[in-house]
Length: 52
Image (cartoon, rainbow, N blue to C red; front, side):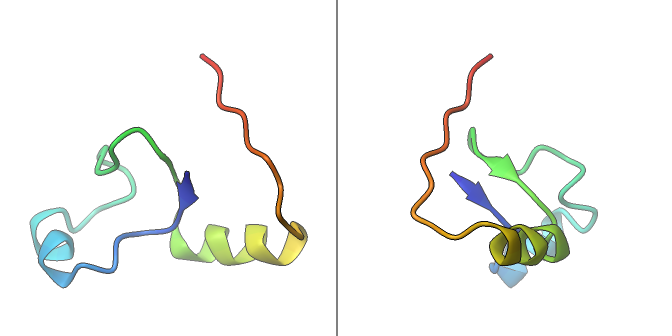
């Protein structure tokens, strides 16, 4: 999944500098501003393939 920053205010208190620390569980994490820009550029559905 590709997503923006977490909406959970408790997580924001514990990890105030996200997205720099690894706060995801295997996803591609973007800042909310970057996610909004990506959303404007891509018209879905778009398959996403993540490879090592």
